[in-house]
Length: 206
Image (cartoon, rainbow, N blue to C red; front, side):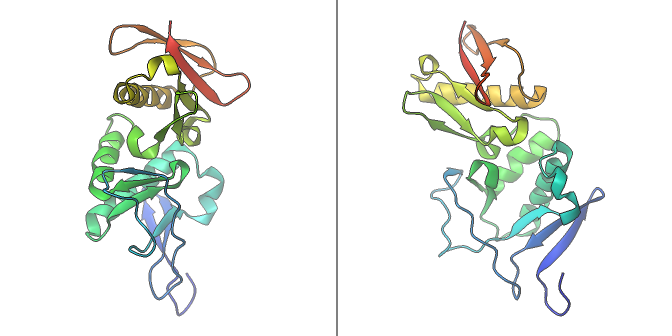
């Protein structure tokens, strides 16, 4: 914080410090580049909204991707959504997502209390040219993205649901170094195989 002019607020949660910037009369925070939206009618645009940026304090920067630190940051984000009724959306940079504020608070709080990882928001999914479904932003959490092979993506809704389940599984185990097998919702057996040349876990039917 600079003397005489507010440039950021230092917030403390569970012994961890975070910086919140973008408040007037300090400089405006840069507006994020969004590629995906959840529970929003359209992507937020800089001509209609202003941004606040919440980040770990400078002394925590080296551990910015650690799970305990990210849980603290996201818990603080939930607190801000509850306390600031004008917040419309929460942006998550690693996945390029804009998440409706109430949806963010609901799914993130549920995860922090022991529920499933909020894959729709803290990650996203895109379809590749060959018809596979790939995650965006999962590598931030586990160092790998998820690729659901085209043989499993004919039904895009079902493939996305499968992707949500697999993202939760991979976050729980912290990524994959060897082949894994799980049972799909339809009872079929799936193979999860980490690539040796790319940071990707591929999935197909056994």
